[in-house]
Length: 390
Image (cartoon, rainbow, N blue to C red):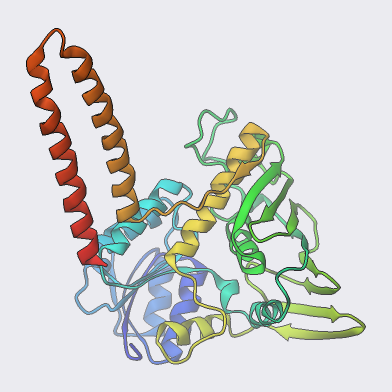
């Protein structure tokens, strides 16, 4: 897909930067929809671009090969659902929504179709992230790991208009779309693997309305623990201790810019000054298939795992308890197995009820083979369907 036509929707800065990087590598901005300033920018980028007032026209455009969804929430999630239904190759600004349910819905629809879907997680394409992950691969996993990180938050990092002061239920959003936790959820997985449990310390009602401090602690499944502090005025940095080895990162983590990396292995120490000015170029080359990266491009499964962690943090803040992360498989086959298990339990209870009813109504026993045969037929048909799809 080295010569693809792009469709850009929304005025998010990342969308414009990625469009410019893709255009530099041979792509072509074919259509766009968004605010007036985006239309003026698109006209300067490509005088022949088609500008639409309706985003649906860009999604359904027959000549667009790759959609870039950079609109604001909640429109971004609505546009993503429409693009998935039309099976369009899509790159969406992360997070696509702040409700976990949408991530599951998109995951189910995505598994049934054949198209590409990428969440825009910039740090995955940074040189610093590439070096840190390469350094971690050289270490023995059996050693104890400890991570400490400080991440600044700003007034704009929280979306105050989403929630009232009182938190009513688990389904209501807690953290705004621009909170750095949405990206640090991916950092934690990159640095230590899947998480086992998290515990969050903070004031939920204040966190909804302002840049309230938040402290996140927890441990990974394969061992090791972490402490991440979000608060105004902090210097953005993290340090990871692995046995006698240590790596330190000084600089931005969500969109890395000028970064100072230092690691120490025993008595030997090395440091680098990295100027991250080609993140979107790497992302564009990876999407277009020009080159591959050592750090894999983010997939929709990564976005789902980030949303699950954010939800777990919100649950921990509400309950003031440690929340385990179960990492359940939310594929179509897993959903079928869960529903089939529930139906099987219901059938057993129904059979038990018919047996108890038999002394009064002997004809009820004739329904037992029908119930069991129906359940068996459903299980067999489901097994055959998913066996064929695999």
